[in-house]
Length: 303
Ligand SMILES: NC(=O)C1=CN([C@@H]2O[C@H](COP(=O)(O)OP(=O)(O)OC[C@H]3O[C@@H](n4cnc5c(N)ncnc54)[C@H](O)[C@@H]3O)[C@@H](O)[C@H]2O)C=CC1
Image (cartoon, rainbow, N blue to C red; front, side, top):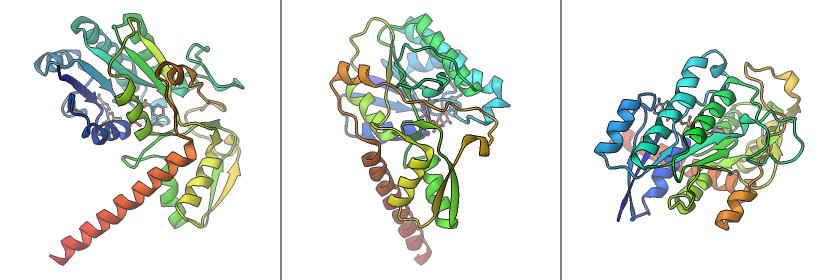
């Protein structure tokens, strides 16, 4: 039987990567929606959509991800990251739909000194982290069969806006850039996460909801990450390390947010790429995409 998969938030980084990778999967039928087609804060709309499209699996890539803005938009962040996840879980449970949901390292306070396991104490420092944690709790309480929560961190992609693209752009314009060196974690190429979800999580054996951690392998600070981006992107911009205290932001962020990935690696017997190898692939893709779009513009001008 061909299973019908609904991907929400499909115009975002992870949703776009899933869309691209899904083209090579023939035993599933995918439907991609973003807020204009299906607003996940409306439970009735979720239910009608699931029934009308005979959905078997939901991959929820929709989220409120503006970490600093969330501090002043708590209600909206709560509606999308908390209540909408509760609605998805309720519908999934009632209609026997499998739910794959994505969460964040920001549910932890970063005061630890060894990689966080899925069971470590949660203590989010900011509104975004708090709303994501409430979403997780709602899902785990409702506990739809086969549900999975995947926590990830520092997500980037050739799609959408992210740290990698910002650094490449600033690296073009600036001679020098200050980047925080005392927040440590692991970057995640959204394509690797998308691939892990599609290859491993679509045929669940779990009766109870599971929580996994997925990031690329290795560890770095934002400063290390920026240095590598400039090097791979061949930018001459000098990157200087600064402490968090020198760059105040509305949302407080954890100093240490490395996630322990042993559970997902053991359960699915997978190897996860090292962060520098994945970053190289993503930057190559960004460069190809940008030269193709320049060629397209040139061709249009010539017409
Ligand atoms: N971006 C990051 O650095 C991190 C992301 N995550 C999580 O990973 C997941 C995927 O993140 P990204 O792809 O980076 O996010 P993104 O911000 O690129 O995409 C989110 C998508 O959700 C859509 N959306 C927002 N409200 C919606 C609604 N009411 N109904 C339907 N769609 C709605 C947006 O239009 C957008 O296309 C999210 O759950 C996020 O919380 C976790 C850790 C870090």
